[in-house]
Amino acid sequence: MESISKGLVNVLQIFGLSRFRGLLLFFSVSVYVAGCSSKPEVELTTVSGVVTERGQPVGNADVQFYPESEAATSGALTGPDGRFELMYADGRKGASPGSHQVVITTGGMAAEGEAGGGDGPPPAAPAEPVQYRQQVEVSAGPNELKFEISTMTK
View 1: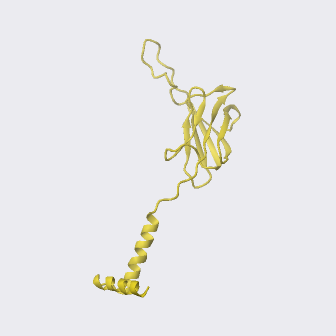
View 2: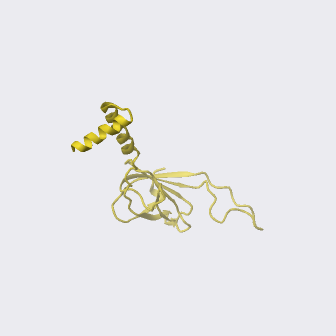
View 3: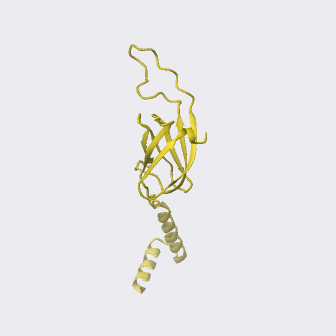
């Protein structure tokens, strides 16, 4: 230990630093390196499900899960069958376990296949977007959820 201490003192003298300044530099670099280390990855659990209205699948609905924790949001767009599988903000599948405010937005987007063109009449204008909200608990392990938007809060 004494040889390490003498070696450190020699290095400090080479750079013209006093012991105090050397220690200050060492602690500053240590704090900087510790602060630059990445945050641990959030553990995710799979979340999938279906969005329906009066029992019929709702396609092209935007499904967003806003966690009450410090984790980021997860979201998905439903397919024509109303099904979705959440993706976390960093691109991984799933959502963080815990309580989430779910916001489902329908309308305001042209449904798949309604881009226009061809010989038929132009597509109808998209409906105004409508948001539905519900509080849910995401548990560890796979989650299969069903949202019946006619019973959700607007």
